Image 1 (cartoon, rainbow, N blue to C red):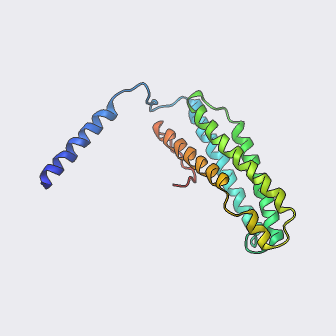
Image 2 (image 1 turned 90 degrees about the vertical axis):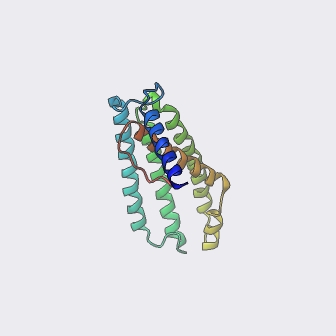
Image 3 (image 1 turned 180 degrees about the vertical axis):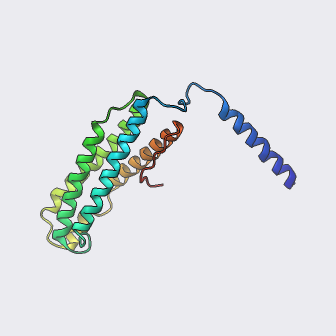
Length: 174
């Protein structure tokens, strides 16, 4: 029985290799055009800048989200501004046609997140206690959905880059 399973595994591996070697028109070429390479490079640079700037916000407001209402307000305002600036930078990218749908999916989820962030920011202006802050940041199904759609798009973008044999790693939730 073990030999039979081993033989089936070997045969499946051969089938997979042969199938992957098939030159299908739907499969991107291994050497993408420069516009695709530039898109992924620019996208990654924007994401890296965002990550660096988030760390700076966290360092500036070490007591945010730990009961310090004013630091939470200031930190969240900085996050919202940073998120919006980053989203604007993504919107200015030159998006190759092959990546347009995926880029739009990410843009749509970011727009939903931004809308919720701004609603929370407006509510946060009148918060005076940690309980007020907790209520503002309570679980929100719309926010969770937008973040999950963003993560799905993020992972799909990483997979698309891999299809083009481009090294591209984002901090997607896996």
